[in-house]
Image (cartoon, rainbow, N blue to C red; front, side):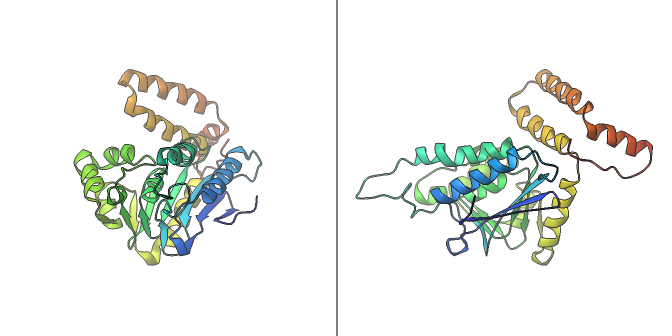
Length: 267
């Protein structure tokens, strides 16, 4: 598929998708959603030996993403008729978050600039979120009479607690990346000069790790929110059984016994 609104490449197991509408701060349109879904579906279906083992999601220019493009026909008010924004959420944002939550590889959001509205929620939907120190996060929804979507009402309370989550959502302040890291909203904020190298290093580390173990860890932690302790222990046992039969577990043990670095294949 030829992409017009995103960039996509794959190098040494690292797939990078770049939201590419820099003149519009990488805000989302129906077309960009369609391209992003197609790229994620292709990544999910790839069974080749050269397939991706980590996804890096970032933005072109000075923004990660400003969220929904309010000029897009899907959400625009035309001739006084209000749009069905709930339909846009169901058709676009919900499937996007669920694709990331169920992706066969770990996901890394590289927040290079402002992440606002759905853009902020999208960054939080990735497994690890790292931001340049000059970046910021903005829950802009109440500024236009809406509520956080794209999983925002799920991610925020879990990450920073109800008091801070409500403050961010109701007051809509711009949260600097350094403060977001201090609050535990994201993994880390990195000096701008070190940001590209840090993202590359993290991506390389994830690409060389035991992929199935990383994904099962994500799934288990997401499940914990609605499980009893007993249910979570059973889930851990089921996942451990599966991973114990994997090639990467055999390699990890062999490397440990042999006192060498493991060479995981993601299998």
